[in-house]
Image (tube, rainbow, N blue to C red; front, side, top):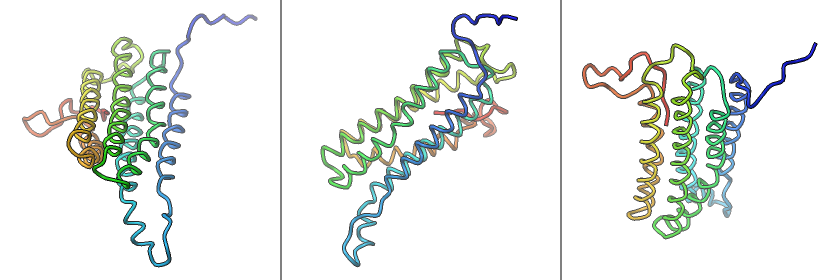
Length: 228
């Protein structure tokens, strides 16, 4: 009995995409931890050496928080996605591409701040970090844009506001990281790092939406978390 020949790119369930994504995100977090090393020091100087690498701790905090929010909300996204097509696979791969690269600007920022927290290298480093972080948010924009174009990829009971809210929050994240990069370049790199640390906290706290202004209930009550 002959099999029917598949034509074009066939839609598929989300199992393989979720498994692959979880693996990439786990590796991304592990790479961040590798940036925390035992600093070279003379006998009796370990305490000072550990304190001197404070930029590495800040970078790890900012980036771990960002990847954690991505992981949490990625899971929530795939609770709602029923099947994958080529466009959604491409958007997901773009998200993983930017996430896997996050350890690079994190290390660059840590090294530059350790050398001179207010120097030109530190300003360039925070601009690099902000650019990649904004690109991660834009990958979510692409993800939601594909869902807006192909609503049949979603489960039938998904909230009506889900895609619209997701796109708005993703654009807000891209603009916020871009503004943080400008703040670091034009004012002080440490101000940018402070924003980098704070933004994942904001997106985690508001993951179920913003209060609607009436009773403090998040807009779109009953919705599952949205993401940056």
